[in-house]
Amino acid sequence: MKPNTASLDLNNYFNSISNAYSVNEYASLYTTRLMRKLALNCITDFKDKSVLDLMSGTGENIRLLKNTKDIKSISTLDYSSKMNSIAKEKLKYLDFEQIEGDFFKTNHLKTYDVILCSFGVKTFTEKSITEFCNKVNGLLNPNGEIVLLELVKPKSQLLTSFLKFYLNNIVATFYGKKFKQLFPFIEANKNLNTFKNQFTSNRLSDLRHQRKFLIYEVIHAKKALG
Image (tube, rainbow, N blue to C red):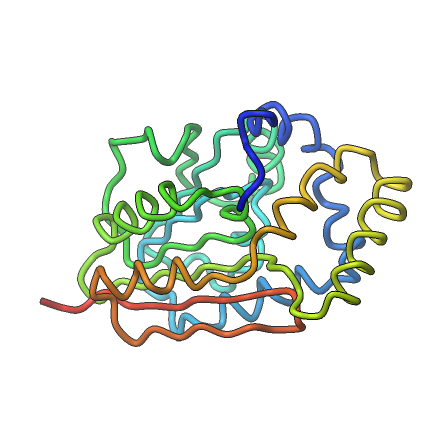
């Protein structure tokens, strides 16, 4: 069972860690950056595509995109004002649309050819997973693609214990105690099977679901033409 998010104000939480958010790359020994690249590589070609990056943080996914001038449009969505402010500064070289708000409550979105979401769903309940997948399905253009990347609980209890020690004692010591608060969500997030099953129910095709480096999972799926 997932921890109760009511005890953690996620908006304030991510605002509070926004200035230190980039340490995720260092703390993960750059595996989060590598995984973002691998996830983006699921999309064969971004040329002339409209792209939406959900739970976009400080713009990590968008900064890894190549040949952005060939992309039709880029939009980001995140509800943390401070994350968005940092992203705007880091992406000032880029013409893009920045949307600030809760994905579940934002109803004026367009439709897109590519939807990206990295490290933004570990706190979801089963109900919000269903709502998320249904809304993503409605936002995808025919033949549109979704790429979902998230941290998951290792299958090995030894590795889980090491991950907990590493986050709670090393990362929290050097980068801030607030990073301790997310471990329970990682521990409860055994896999992305519920997302996979919901995408399948929504008749997304060419669905690929892979675990990488023991603690990451990626889902790539495509919406049918008809």
